Amino acid sequence: MSEMTTAHGIARRPLVARLLENRPEGLLVVTGLGSPTYDVAAAGDDARNFYLWGAMGSAVTVGLGLALAQPDSRVLVVTGDGELLMALGALATVGVQKPRNLAVCVLDNERYGETGGQASHTGSGVDIPAVALACGFREVRCIRAADGLGAACALLREAEGPVLASFKIDGAEQPRVMPPRDGHHLRTRFRQALLGNEAGLTG
Amino acid sequence: MARAAAGTQPGTGRMTGMRLRMWRPRGRACLSCRQLWNLPPRPAVDQPREGSVAGEFNWAPGDWRRDIYEALRAADVRQVAYVPDAGHASLIRACHADDAIRAIVLTTEEEGIGVLAGAHLGGQRGVLLMQSSGVGNCVNTFSLIRNCGFPMVAIVTMRGEWGEFNPWQVPMGQGTEQAMKDGGFVVQRLERADEVGPAAGAALSMAFDGGTPVALLLSQRLIGAKKF
Image (tube, each protein chain N blue to C red):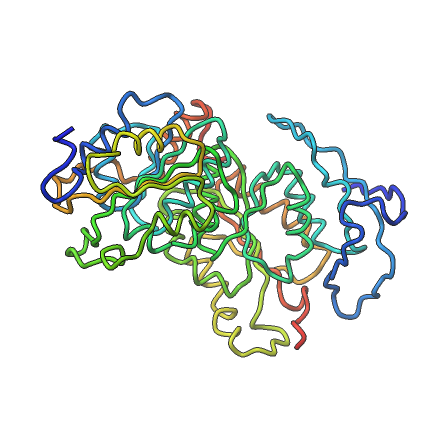
């Protein structure tokens, strides 16, 4: 498990790759803009990934609407601390709905990596898992080292939701792996992968 | 849409016993009794809707929000995301009372844009109910609509216009129509109760059959200026 961590924290790319390995048919992924989008793309582009390239703060709410619409699928939101902090209220909204199939993975580098590495609130003690728990999530984890990482991945993949795990990651920038950013394409291919080829523009 | 009065017996509806503080338009008679309505047959859908109690909801006679609700049901809308608002109050209650509809209370309006986008990705239809004051909160998330073409219907109760007492409502109220247009919505203002139902049906069709986002602005003249 040593490659899962560096001297500065959990290695984000191996972590996301592990989260998505042996991906079952029903695992749907929504990513928050910035590095989490690149991390998920680096693990292998997939029509069942919906990458956000903007609308900061929307990853959890897109995941919520999707999870409610597809109760038999597993919905995994992969986002960063800054993206999630922009919409902390969304955790409260999830807590009210309590979707059993929604999991949120926070890649927490305690900074805004896309904009020059400015410190985010989590580096000053703001505890996202504690907020999620207070909002009514069934189970939350904060993972700082390799120990417990496998269990946290299992939580996100299988446990009754809503669940959230925050991983304190090495903040070093990774090579950018850019998935498609044409939103119409991303939306249409996602729906076709999930709902069949006849699922087109509307619906 | 056909509405058959099943009876007027009190105590038979699910909501009976609660004091319903229904808003009523100015100048309209305040009716003292509530009627228990039967809803028209539900449309065929791909998932069962057992357990729905929508037919038991007690609408105030003449409440045009019922026309919106029936349009939502006819269009098979399954998710209704909302920030609470007095103008939408009976519609929100009806959605909560209906097991076929997931009523999703939001902490802020922009969450609703994400929720509806997710619903569409998952093959369900949703609408967003909010007040004009919240439209500005959504502006950045409107990029989901423009960039991805998500079909959306927003039903917005207006403040900051006709007879507005609170000047703090005016800046956003006056900017609402333009903000929605800038966000990619086709905007329709509604001034009369009798146009609400047809407009709701038309908006849902335009969005979900045609892929065009539509915002219905329920004017303050229609819903009545808030009293202080």
